[in-house]
Amino acid sequence: MGLSTHVLDTMHGCPAAGMAVALYTTDGDQATLVKRFELNQDGRNPDGLLYDHASLKAGTYRLVFDVKAYFLSRGVALPEPAFLDRVTLDFGVAHADQHYHVPLLVSPWSYSTYRGS
Image 1 (cartoon, rainbow, N blue to C red):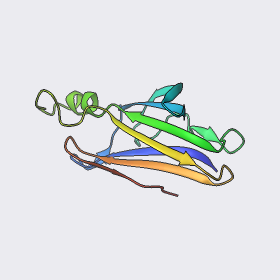
Image 2 (cartoon, rainbow, N blue to C red):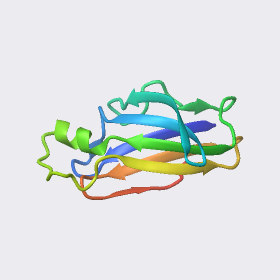
Image 3 (spheres, one colour):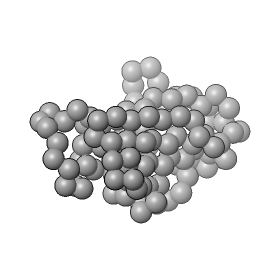
């Protein structure tokens, strides 16, 4: 239970190790930074859950993934400006007693997400 994320680099077919991510709580247009972290070798938060079961509350959240910097660090030649810079995902948690997993599948030109398990 809780909140987690996982990023897969679909260009290279691997986890997005080293990508910078920021987690925020949101209230309308206002966002409050909760934490910043860099993804581990598995493309996940090195500290495990972003929120454990006891800490996750119903409400709205934002994950910001630094896609451009990640692909530049992998040696990918990107145009300027890059098509994707940061991918921002705003999502809601309606049932804090359930697990919310927010995966990101990303390349320099596209991304997709869904509520995982």
